[in-house]
Image 1 (tube, one colour):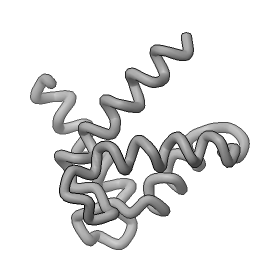
Image 2 (cartoon, helix red, strand yellow; image 1 turned 30 degrees about the horizontal axis):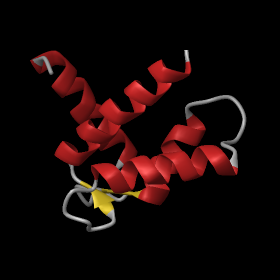
Image 3 (tube, helix red, strand yellow; image 1 turned 180 degrees about the vertical axis):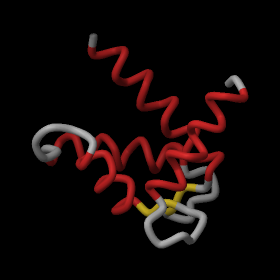
Image 4 (cartoon, helix red, strand yellow; image 1 turned 180 degrees about the horizontal axis):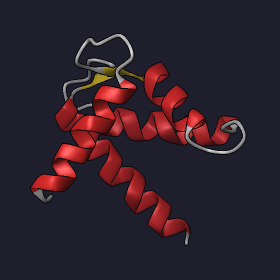
Length: 84
């Protein structure tokens, strides 16, 4: 990942991290994704996001660090590209 992309991901992470904890909960991430699209996420979409979060959550803390968030976003991009 290029430096500018990493800075953009860090800024996005910080915007999503509403409580300033330095990690993203599943709820924070689902809320952020839901707010960025038209209409509410379906239960199937939420389940897919949770599965991607669980896959990216390497330390199994239930929350994503910046590094894990980048991995999550890469999984999300690959999944979105697969749907096209």
